[in-house]
Amino acid sequence: MSTPQETSGQAYWRANIRLVMIHLAVWAFVSYFCGIILRPALSGIAIGGTDLGFWFAQQGSMLVFIAQIFIYTAQMNKLDRQYDVHED
Image (cartoon, rainbow, N blue to C red; front, side, top):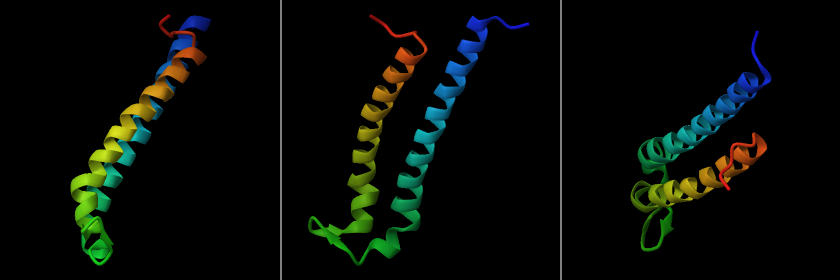
C-alpha cells in the first residue's frame, strides 16, 4: 500500500516527465521539421535579408530554445509550488 507522500511524489514525477516530453517535442519540431524538412518550402519567404528557411535553421531555432529555457523554468517553479517541493 502506498502512502500519500509516495503518491504525491509519483504525480510530481509524472507531471515533470510530461513537461520534459512537451519541450522535447517542441525542440524536435523546430530543429528538424522547421529547420530541415520545411526549409525548401520556406525558402521563398524573405525575413531579415535572408529566406525564412535559412533563418529558422540558423537563428530561429536558437531563439526558440532560449525561450524554452525560460518557459520550462517558469513551469517547473509553478509545478514545485503546486506539489510543495519549492525552495524558499
